[in-house]
Length: 500
Image (spheres, rainbow, N blue to C red):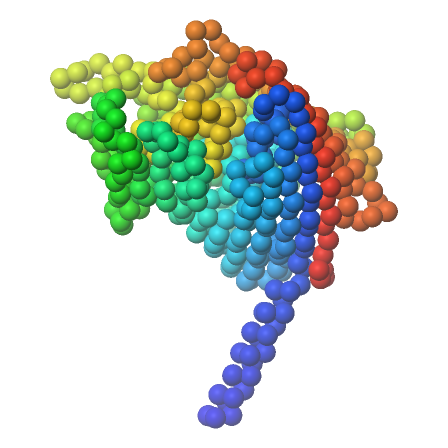
């Protein structure tokens, strides 16, 4: 018995030592130095947005970034896979001089992964480099720390002969923008929250087997919520213009029932009054995407429909507000590799103005969902940046200390192009034309127009492996965010500490 126990302990120690040794293999690192110089008061739009919150509205800024990590995919031949990452940023003319951008650990068994921490995640069913972004969970805001159980890649459902594939996640976390909200609203009676909790979930089903038939279709549902935390300056409904709420605060529900209401929308907020709505700030979208997989080329069309609370989630009335997109991937050539076009409309917002119809008031008047704004949690944002699509200008652009989206009724056309003229040079171009009607509660007399352009090129010399030098030009036109132009220079170096 003693000998067996000793052998077992030695085997366990040897296994543990092997696991620890494995964590030091396939570790990558990177360092980035970036500087931006511009004219007027605001940086070019595409210098600021869709950068995981590492953009700034300041025309002149800089950052130094250092990251180290290991991808769980490095253990792709094992049942158990482990990944981790740490990404730190020092910044000038940003909202903070020191930023922990990423800090996470991934533990995966076969297809199921538990991810803990804050991590940059690509948007679902869209091109992460060229798209304007997802309507619910985009690549615009700084990552939110969370515990996330997921199928990170499409998992082929057994016994379907490779024709059905599933991708899903469920997560709970916490917003970490207390300092930004407190500073941004200082001296005002505007809404702000601290330590608000976060929830998201999604499920996507892909039908098709690209190896046997070139057409696949993917659809699914994505939802998120803010709940819990503490709120300041919360007024009671209907709209209360009293100043007696200034600096008043109240704790919001954060028990097990609140977690359940975030998962299955229900309950109500403390100031809903007679007509209770779902508890917290609830938001979601339906997705559908059709892909054609050609030999050396491909084409895709997709659509996404945004809804808030339960309004527009189903077919109470026609879906008019949509993001439509098309992507064409060309055969290998030195000019263009991918062309993307998107059209976004958010002008309808067919939620009830007063409340849903009742026995005493059988007619509901629609038209005021007020996308991304919330009467308790102020806005669907994190540290000033929209967690959803960046084309609805984020609160970070506001100058009145109000955490609110002032331009959520828009129509926009967006184009993205990228290519590789040589093995060492790649480029991308983003161009957006947008019109805004403001909001229903604060409309523009005439639509306000804007155009946003960015041209970016990156040189990666083969003589110095891991080095890349990028240069970009950006420009804004129109009155929505003002006129501006600027240049950005980025120097990066990456490599492996130990690579098998």
